[in-house]
Length: 389
Image 1 (cartoon, helix red, strand yellow):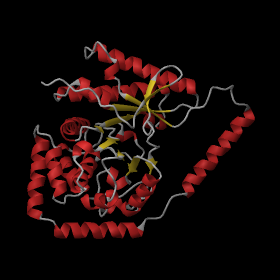
Image 2 (cartoon, helix red, strand yellow):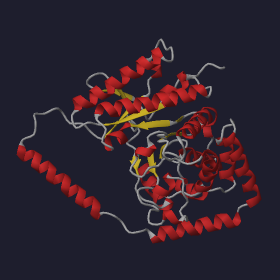
Image 3 (spheres, helix red, strand yellow):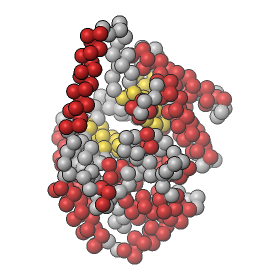
Image 4 (cartoon, helix red, strand yellow):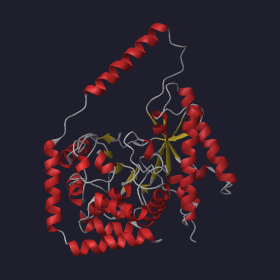
């Protein structure tokens, strides 16, 4: 087996240190501008937004996807009505990504794809569009929010497949990126979701580390070197309201990870095997306990915030839903159905066997398959997420 290459020096994920000396990786640093975060659901509007950010000097673009896309459903499925375009971009096929990334210098921009279960599908669509525009896959830089085990903890429940199949897709994505898109960061374990679900800082660190180590074990079982996989993980934690607790969380996570690398994987130098650590939110300096009046004000602010959130529910985006349905209808009318059925058969065969599923998935997407159709073929072989999680 060839020796694992060292992890690349990511220009948009440079190391910084907390007051306790715990190393963090903060996306958007390195003099390249903060990541532009997008909330609009139409691919055309998103493209305009991206170009405005690029004109302002931003070189890291974050792309969240709406709930149907993030759960592997096409916009014209009955269950997607009312959710299309809310919270992110609606992407059903390569046509949407052509609009989304049209005119974007993909060899000079870091793309962060904020998706879970369909992350591999969306990466392949971006690669196909980049190659159509003349950019080689080796020049592409980006990251996937592919939290394979944390998806079920999201409020929307973004898990699609059972745990074993989810880990299989993760290891196939690792192997594919190593061979085809080597500058992409492939996996993020979002401990912040655990905190949002009510976990204490101890539980957040323990469970996220367990997730990360499970991914490393699965990748090693699939033949990938730990020295390749471990430094390409990102462990993301919620910033505690006090900086001291945040620092302790990250320092404890580093120590436990280092011990696991030594004791389970036989590492002698654990520093090159450290994952990237990322903090979501902002800590504040330690201060004396709040007074009763301050506590009352804080409670009132939270109640107002909750009320505002309830009142901010949007009606269905009827115009976008219609556009997406029309685009899908045209796609299905013009594509070669016989070729597509052959591609789906190849995806199913790979999923049932040991071949990397991303290669036939790429062929299917290039032939006009939709996100929902590809996820449906995989689910037909692997089953869907349920009580196992």
